[in-house]
Length: 115
Image 1 (cartoon, rainbow, N blue to C red):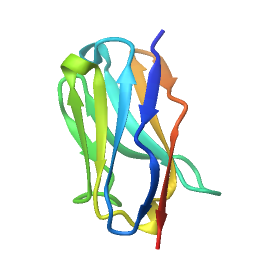
Image 2: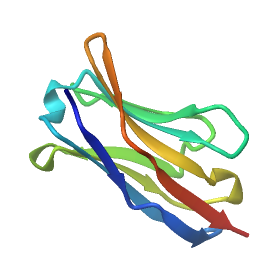
Image 3: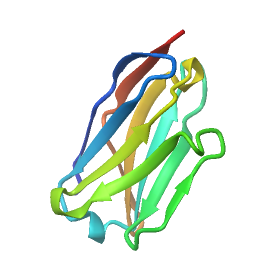
């Protein structure tokens, strides 16, 4: 079992920044893939960024250049740094962990960007 706890969401103005955190209940080096997803109101959940246990990262085209995924192995934490936020970034952001065939989700954290 893997527990994921997200934090760092909130209300910001367009152009502002937020850093989301996902604390994992086990070593993130033992996780095959950690990912950040988001679900805007009325839309499907989509992948934002991911990082493998080996450190390889991927960022969606819609946020490239603005969002960065990183990790602190000692703290078992994965971060999503979000800069130059836009109203269309408003969504519930979820942390996901894949361990072999199993998938775990956090509860989500709300990000609201005002214009």
